[in-house]
Length: 326
Image 1 (spheres, rainbow, N blue to C red):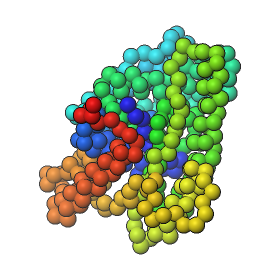
Image 2: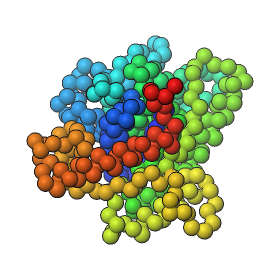
Image 3: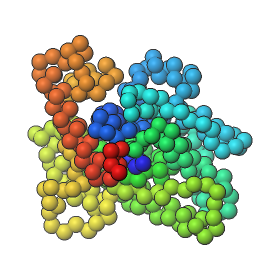
């Protein structure tokens, strides 16, 4: 099973829209998928369920992560059971929860303690990883998609430790160019190196806790809501900024036009996204009854082709295992 985190410290880049559509597309290509909403604002959960159904989920605590974390938080045990919600064939979801934001302070305090002998900080820091592993195994997922909130806090750090690969949804703007340097040096490379020290220590001393590798390897970037007339200046700078900021490379000369880290550039889709949000379904599933008439119907078919191509490419780059493979 591979875990892919969708991450950007800036909101409004289309991160959740991208995660939502790929969560629907990957199972259709034969990859059973678990989608995990780790943003306390729960935007991905709203996209899947709508507010009325999500309210019912919050009341019943069905398919939510926080109740499973409570024994660990309360100091009465480790992790409780967790059962994802089935959305469709081979698509399951762990719903978002505003209470996840309560973990920020404790996770932040535990991070400096990881190199000590106390096992509790180790259990709390790896709790998200361990829950995801259990949930994915329970539903037979070959890929887990993590939708993270737009920040560089302790909750996202624990979530990224669980990620094999990190996908960066970007807008073609100045913030994306500048932000890539911070995300690379402080977040990916910084947190990865600190976690490596933890792994080395516990490899020597041993631990009863299952520890993630903390690879956080960059999968690549997707430019969203692209308007060639308004954003070409910034989109042309992204390949170099990604290599220098995220990969830590010293780039000389021009980055090739067929940059392998550039997974796709997706159009704005105009009003189709709003229509999909209203219907709580991906754009490529919109029907006439949803309002997808005329040019919208044509655009929905374009979305189908583009997301299928993107999902195929992500599967190849991330090394996803197809159930039909021996």
